[in-house]
Length: 184
Length: 128
Image 1 (tube, rainbow over the protein chains, first blue to last red):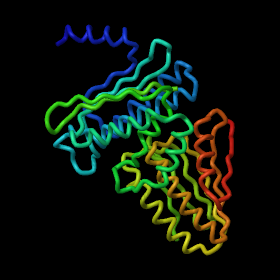
Image 2 (image 1 turned 45 degrees about the vertical axis):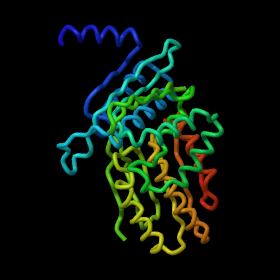
Image 3 (image 1 turned 90 degrees about the horizontal axis):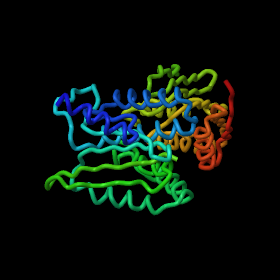
Image 4 (image 1 turned 90 degrees about the vertical axis):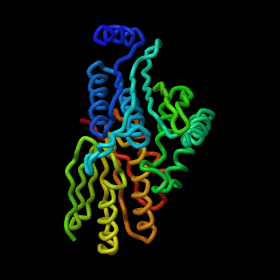
């Protein structure tokens, strides 16, 4: 195990990884990691727009893990908020643009719905996304989900290209979901 | 009515609603774990305030550095509530404040402004 860590370290560095997290995600973790990433980017003089896009995508992805990851802590106490297992990566593409990726287990029955949402967003241009966002913001009922169901559209609007996603079936009940957003 | 006041946290804004001056303020960041849970009491207070305060002018100052998609939905609901009140003839002013370098906040303000009819929605730029 110990000797593997250097291999991971080098692999991550070679791939332009800035931040990699795999473990329990809670709201506190969302605030901590997103805040840390924002501080780091500010310290390195990244433009304000770029800092905000990365922060925003990171928050949306991590809050999705907290809300929807099907792998959850059995010991979550009342009042301490939800804790769910997931993975987050922030890094830079070879052209210098930032990307944010996440991965977590989801229920197999949700795969078709998620895939068709993401597929629809991939086909939309900037103006379509804006119109769709405003329409959904008005029409979505609160009861539909713990969030507002707007997160994917928000991320698509911050993305410089159609968002990448993948599902790996694990067993009858579970798939592994991952997505990657390259910030504008 | 009593004044409604909530301290800011890392992921939720400072809220100060004064029924005497009828000036409402929401300032900070907004990405709480449970958005409807956090803003529920805000809507409850506002509903009572609006039915109480008859036709007096109401001013809402909003200075939000970042808000997540759930908060965006919540703010739309908030503006819709104020908009239907303004439709009855009450003057409602929303000042959407943003830092001159915060383009995202300005664009978000513009999108909210386009989505309301009766509120006087002002985009207010500030510098340090």
